[in-house]
Amino acid sequence: MVTYFENLGKLFYAIAVSDKKIELEEIEILNQYIEEYWTDCDALEGIAATDPAYQIIITFEKLQEQQTSSTIAYKAFENYYNQNKSFFTNSAKHTILLTAEAIAKAFIGKNKTELGMLTKLKLLLKN
Image (cartoon, rainbow, N blue to C red; front, top):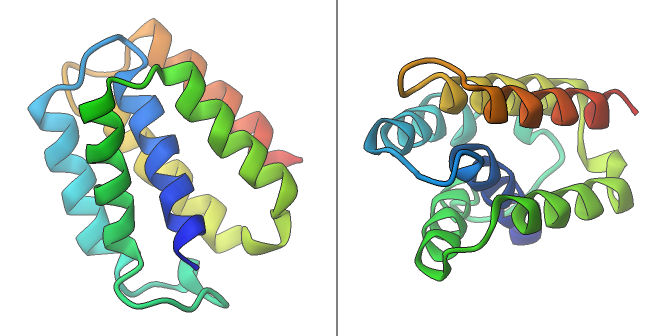
């Protein structure tokens, strides 16, 4: 289920680049959370793939190289989510929010743009 993790990569990229720049601390937090929460966790329940969590990083880096806008990356995640809500368990939603919030506050706390992205994400995941 690589597409699932590619779209998580798009989401986390959108959060990190929402203020128009990605800081090293944000990448470090993403890598830390991949190791701690995404490589072997309840959020992956029902999702089968080999080393799927690392697809998050691969996608994040690809979007960074392409200098994709936050809006485009977030919209791609949003579309995927709306078409595949059954893949997103409560545990997955919790881990997604945990990761997104950690990325947003990784460099000098959350700024206004990141707060806006987090609010949009929380509303999306409630539906």
